[in-house]
Length: 82
Image (cartoon, rainbow, N blue to C red; front, side):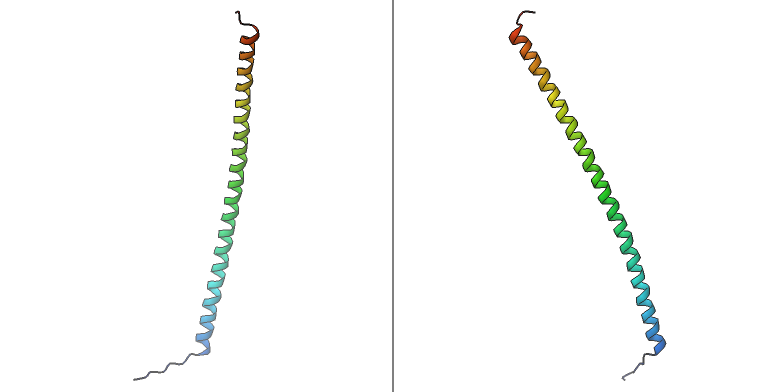
């Protein structure tokens, strides 16, 4: 009824080797994930810089249009006759 099995030293060594192999695979995958995360962070940083540049361009455009409108209103206020 009761079958007993014994674990030999070679079985233990095989298990240790399998565990070590898994540890190495985990380390490799962790390094790959870290590299990908660093690349994503770099891309996000670049996107933020581009967004900041676009914000600056937008404010320059709005300021230019405001100054032009102010100039036109000043012309009509001080020189109403064409």
